[in-house]
Image (tube, rainbow, N blue to C red; front, top):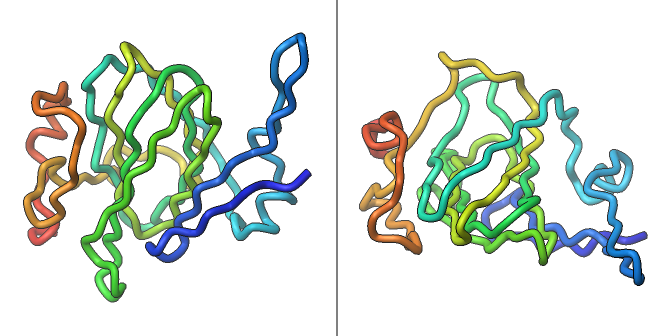
Length: 177
């Protein structure tokens, strides 16, 4: 069983398409199998799974974690989102650049986000259920964010009037980190 993997020009970010088996009963796929993911470069030990349910036009992000930094493997289990990854590695040639991917419960795509990146998503469907594996345990004091509409990053979000948390409305700009 081979995973289809597309490498991003943001070094380390992977778009992963698992093999989906369909028959008259429905569908089956392995959403994570440690050895197969190690073979494609996902070597972290994921220690926690997080799940969120959000309404249409909700933006969650752009989030990252201070040291120890956190890697993520994300996917949508219900609905559709526009998923965004931003390179915040100061010595990277792609520092401040972003890439976006449409993830849904029908395309089964996953995004692997290594440490050194901020992450966020915007809900495109009426609701979306988002699942992510993380390599570090949750810590409120280590959870950080970048302003969702930072003009230096200039993410092309698919909504003009997002639903945001109070925290996400007031995160600092990338240049102020």
